[in-house]
Image 1 (cartoon, rainbow, N blue to C red):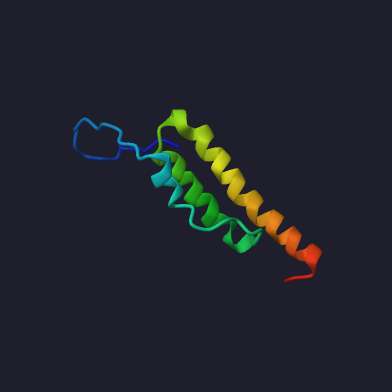
Image 2: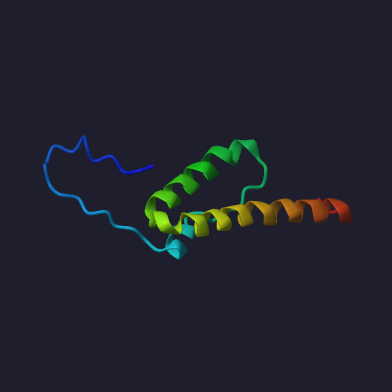
Length: 85
């Protein structure tokens, strides 16, 4: 998604400012744990993070997001295997 500045009344020229991938990752403070009630919040945070970084860095962030989901899922599976809730 790109920022929409069309509703701004001024005709000022906007330059796009991006943050680093590390800074964008700070928005993803929680891993997605499979809780459907928290899914919307997680997706919204991921969307914002993608908007804040250079498009050429999207693949790096995507790999991080996938990893954050996978870590939680693997942890839950391992705990279930051990009989830990």
